[in-house]
Image 1 (spheres, rainbow, N blue to C red):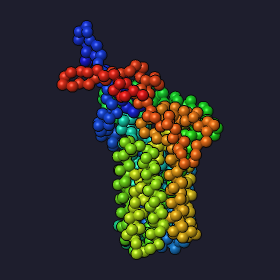
Image 2 (cartoon, one colour; image 1 turned 30 degrees about the vertical axis):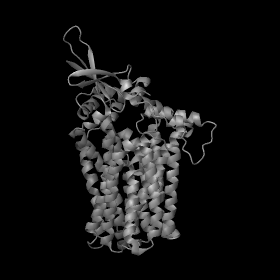
Image 3 (tube, rainbow, N blue to C red; image 1 turned 120 degrees about the vertical axis):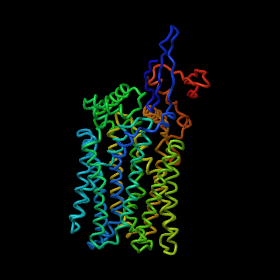
Image 4 (cartoon, one colour; image 1 turned 180 degrees about the horizontal axis):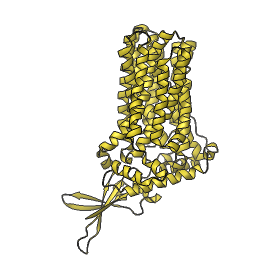
Length: 555
């Protein structure tokens, strides 16, 4: 019996052909490993190990967010800082992360993923060292500048690296580990604030923030000595044999690695052809690309516009204003909020592929609006502190099961290959600029507007984000990149000369709402599969051949 594998659609369907070589009547039989069957196969330990190492970068980012919230209060007490100076101390990293994010794509392509990990870790460790050695605000802010650069450089590296070493049918599951690691880091930062805040003044915050060196130091070691380079980067730089060896470790033994290499080469060729046009398709977009930019860049901005990340940074201050003046109680409730936020991500990850992106985004932003309005009126009443804590936890949970983790998944699903690199850079830029603006205005706005006005203002922004995503972001679940490109093109044609009322989605037309072609039939028409594969089902030793198109329901 001779076997070989023919990769099918991009979701990871593989057809295994087997030919019995005995006898003149030998004929091929085929079995199809569907995406659902592939999902039942857990990734091998090698893939988990490398993905786990990469996730240390996200753990590091999350720890900085969690530790700086509690640490900033202690820094303020030790150095005698005003609220405005604390805002600058915290916000400096957010501002510089914008520049780090702009540098990251070029470094990833020039140096490779491993060396970009090394660079990010070195810059971040330098920033932490400056902060914990500082005796005045100027040096502390300089340290935060370096920290922000490291955050920006590392922001997209680990999901990019994980996606490039993972089999496609496990990519979503493994990349989601990055988001889980960020929130695990946030909880760890809160816990360290609770554990060490009682130490002598000047020592406590230096230990809390200084522990942020641990994760990047471990990652630096692995990146220098044990992590393999991304197969995609190796192939792009003419080192295909090395890439082939890595892919053989990452993929199951029944997968045709040569076809995987060929597919990667095709993607690289498509991206290189896109580079020849430069930024022109972005600056002078066609109607369909305009819709893509409204969906993708808008989603990146909407993730930050409701202030959820800034609320994590300033949660100790917010809790202090709510009446939790005891540092211990304050930090304990921070841990509770972080734990709820972490748990909610699991709920979103479980439902995102069954419920869809748009429903979760609508539910998430709608609940954020409701909880922010409730916080605005409950917060000033210190006799309702229990209800205040519940509402803050509920707000964080609403963010974390929807718009938080879905953002980068959704953004990656709306752009075609030849635009993806530049468009993703634009999305990251919009996300970080918005985060920087929010982080640098939280205390100023709360002092100027009062706490009720402050939360009402952000509730309006949450409501706006709900409307924006309802109007401009289509459902992407179950569609390939090619199908999404065709979808936007059809939408652009249908919208020409039409005015869609503001209370309707741009994609509300019944024709666009129809179920899209299945992956297999789409692959047939795009040339991925030249002929319709037959599917063999074995039942009690009998083999029944079922037409693939009939099995999947056609169009």
